[in-house]
Amino acid sequence: MRRTGSKNRLFIAIPLSPEVGRRILEYQTKHGRQPIKWIPQESLHVTLFFLGEISEKKNHKIIYKLESMLEKREPFTMNLGKISLYPAKKARMVWGMFNNNYEEFRALVGDLSELLDEFVRAQERSKVIPHITIGRLKSRVRSKKVLEEVLERPLAVRVETVVLFRSHLTSEGSVYEPLYSFPLMGI
Image 1 (tube, helix red, strand yellow):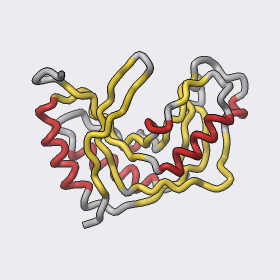
Image 2: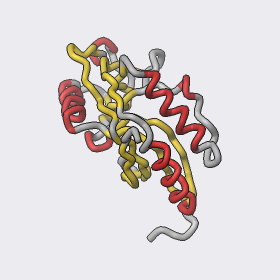
Image 3: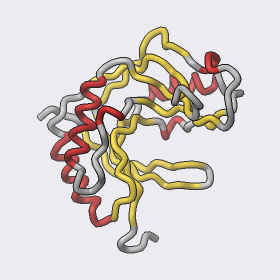
């Protein structure tokens, strides 16, 4: 039972289609012997905005603001073009990197930042890199080239819905619970 006045660890993200999840799972299976903690398929997403610890009483206000803004946005598509290690020096993660539509993604991040500035410190939109965290390195990888792949045909990620998630930290890692979905309808 949650106590009154408790806080939720919240973030806003783009969910992935089953097809995108399946293709990422194929990559994870192919490289399964590497020293990597793979992100489960059901937890894969593209983070737009991390809200952090937010009191439950603010949730409804956040949902109302998000719904009002996101229903006006048009859906768009981003293409997943390569998988690489990040950051380049002293890599700690395996990322799926997008190769187009940074403008639409960054505009959405910027609008979210402005909309939610009363709840959290604004994010610098130019520093947000659209990506999917596919895995976290447990130790150094002998050859980065083994893990890095340019996809022969980019994988389209259609952004039609944005989701407000609650993150639960467990001994096994983070578990993401969708709280509310916001369709992009362009109205």
